[in-house]
Amino acid sequence: MSHTATLAGTRAGRREWVALAVLALPTLLLSIDLSVLFLALPRLSADLHAGSTQQLWIMDIYGFMIAGFLVTMGGLGDRIGRRRLLLIGASAFSLASVVAAYSVNAEMLIITRALMGVAGASQMPSVLALISNIFKDPKQRGIAVAAWMSCFVGGTAIGPVVGGVMLQNFWWGSVFLLGVPVMALLLVLGPVLLPEFRDPSGGRIDLTSVALSLAAILPVVYGLKEVAKSGLGTAPVVAIAFGAMFCVLFARRQATLTNPLFDIRLFANRSFSAPFVVFMIGGAIMGGIYLFVTQYLQMVEGFSPLRAGLWLLPSSLAMITSSMLTPGLARRFGPGNVIAAGMALSAFGFLLLTLVDSTGGTLPLVAGFVIVGLGSGPYSLCTDLVVGAAPPEKAGSAASIAETSAELGIALGLASLGSVGTAIYRDHLVVPHTVPADVAAAAREGITGAVSVAGHLPEAVGADLLDSARVAFTSGLNAAAIFGTVVFAGLTVVATVLLRHLRPAAPEAEADAEITPETTAEPCAV
Image 1 (tube, rainbow, N blue to C red):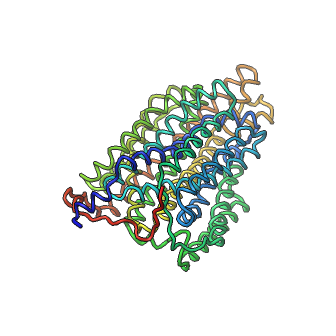
Image 2: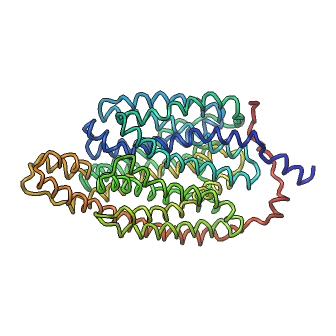
C-alpha cells in the first residue's frame, strides 16, 4: 500500500468530526460547571453559611478529586472501554449534580462536589483518549485537540453568562442543574456515534496505586488549606510532608509495575515532560487568577453575576481564537517557539494586572486578562504534544496524565494563590474600631464576608469597612499578578530551551508520513 493510500485510510471523515462534536458535550459541561461556581460562590456561601476554608473546599475538592482519580480512570477506560466509562461517568455526574443543587449545608455540598469530581474524572481522559484514537493523522489531531480545548474555554465563557442569568432569576442551586440536559444528550448520542476502544492486553487496576495516589494528594490539600486559614503550624506542615512521602512511594511503585497507573517512564521523553510542566504550572496560575478576577468584578466593582460574566467573555473569546490559530502557527514556526511566545504574552498580561486599582479597574483588568487569554492558546498544543509523544497503546494513560496536570494545577493554583490572597487581604484590612468583634472576624474571613456584614452596620461605618476590604482584596490581586508575571516569564525560558528541538512540520513530510492504526488497542464496532 502506498504512503498516500495509508494516509487517506487514517484521515478522519464526516463521521469522526461528528463524533468530536459529541465529545465536546462533556467538555463543555465540566468547564461550565467550574466557571459557574466562581460566580455562584458568594451567594451559596452566604446561604450555606460557609466560612473561608469551607469555600476553598467547595471550590477545590472537585478539582482535587478529579486529579486524584484521573490516572485510575484513564487506566480503567483502557481496560473496560473508553466509551463505556465515558457514559457511566455521565450518568453519575448527572445524579451528583442534582444532589448538589439541593444541598442544605456546606458539608453536603463539599461531599457532592467530591462525587462530581470522581464522575468527572471518569469522563475527561476518555474524551481525550478517544480523540487520539479517532484522529490518527497528526495534523487533524492537532486541529481536533485545539477544537476540544476551545470547547473547554467556550464552556468557561458560556458558563458565567448562562449562570448569571440563572442566578438573577433562580436560587444558586440551579447552576448545578445546567449539566443534566447536556449529559442526557451525551447518553443518547454517545452509543450511536462514538466508537469503542479498549486495550485487551491491559492488566488489572492496581488498587494499591489508587490508594497511594490519594494519600499523596489529599494531605497536601489539607495542609495548604490550613495554612490559608491559620498560617504555618505543625499540623499543616506534617500533612504536606506526609503527602510528599506518599508521592515518592507512589512513583516508586509505578516504576516496578508492568502495567502502571501512571507510567513515569514517559517523562524521560523531553517532548512529553516539557509540555507537561508548562501545562501544569501555567494552568495553576490561570486557575488561581480566575478566582481573583471574578471576585473583583462582583465584590469590588459591585457587578451582578450576569454583568461579571459578560465582562469575562472577551478573554474567553481571545483564548478560543488563539487555540484555533495555534496548530497552523506551530506548523509554520515550530511548537516550541509558539509555546514560548504564548507564555511571554501571558506574562505581559499578568504585568498589566499588577496595575489594577480598587476603583475604576475594570478596563485594565479586562485588557490584561484578554492578553493572558491570547497567550493561553498554546495550551492545546501542549496537550497534543503530551498525547502525541506517548505510544498509541498508552493513549488513555497519556490523556489521564495530561488531564491530571491541568486539574491538579488549577486546584493547586486556587489553593496556593487563594492562600496568598487571603493572607495579604487580612494584613491590609483595616476594620473600624466601632465594629463588633464577631462582625470584624467575619470581615477578616474574606471580602465576601466583609460585603455580607457591611450592610448590617451603620452606613458610614459599613462604607469605611467596604472601602478597606476592596483595597485589601485588590492588593492581593496585584500580588498574585506579580507572581504570575514571574512564573510565566520562567515558563517562556523553559519552552524556549526544552522545546527548541521541535521543528516546524514540512508539508511534504506530513504527506509522506505513514501512520499505522493502534496495534494494541481493540477498536470495537459502534
